[in-house]
Amino acid sequence: MSAPLKRIAFAGIGNMGWPMAANLVKAGFEVTVCDVVPGRAASFATETGAKAAATPAEAANGADCVVMIVPTSKQVGEAVEAMLPSLKAGMLVIDMTSGQPGRTREIAAMLAGHGVAMIDCPVSGGVPRAKSGQLAIMVGGPAAEIDRAEPVLKAMGTSIYRCGDIGAGQAMKALNNLVSAGGYLIGVEALLIGQRFGLDPTTMVDVLNASSGMNNSTQKKFKEYVLSRRFDAGFGLDLMVKDLSIALEVGRETTTPAPFSALCRELWLAASTSLGPGVDHTALAKMLEQMTGTVLGGNKES
Image 1: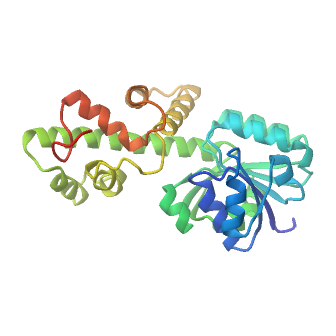
Image 2 (image 1 turned 180 degrees about the vertical axis):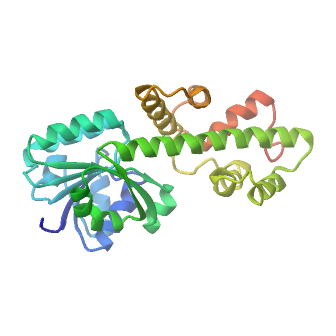
Image 3 (image 1 turned 30 degrees about the horizontal axis):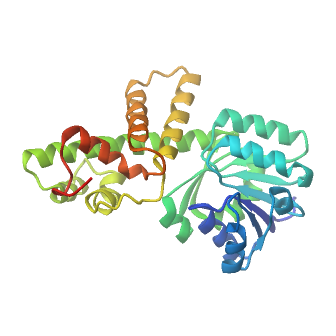
């Protein structure tokens, strides 16, 4: 039986990674963090009592396990390449990035040649559930390696779903976000139709939440981030487009016709192009408001 994973190298302490790594520290793991943003690892170490490393290789040196959550599989590959001198046979890499299943399988095969195992474990729940340690975690990889990782994963999430072989967790995450994106898009359109008809959008959200139109966006996004005009849920519009593109890529690889999914992805991409870089995914509503000449919730600037 493999020894428990105690010493963790954590790469990527952004909006999601910071609270996730903090929960590992709270759970008693020895955590060393690194990040591409200068000073961020040191700030995290000061705040939490973890250790900071200047490079991925330094973070991984002496670790039992590597956890990473970065924007794309390209960055995962770069981080793994940088860590290779410090990765020893028997170590485990836990990739929590919402990445590309095909690329993840390539990285896993390369690592296997060095005696290092890999599983993919993307998450859902956003920053609030990352902070509370209540993330849903979708896992792909060998059962024995998932068993090894379970204490680490349970420090960050309350729902762990074994989805299949390596890459299966990421496929599931992309498809989850496809469903979420579709619900958000159709919900905003419904609110715009209703407001132009004369319905109050706040009342509409209440009715939807008591009826069959309820979804995650009606429950947690429309009042909080759209009608409030905050547009700051903490998940970038560019990242949503990336996840939808991955979902469509899985669809192509499985030769699955998905016309509505394709249209959904194109509309989110159009919003990203129209609204520019750095905006929250909830800002998609602004593009639809511009198309209709209507601002949800009143005559406020969009």
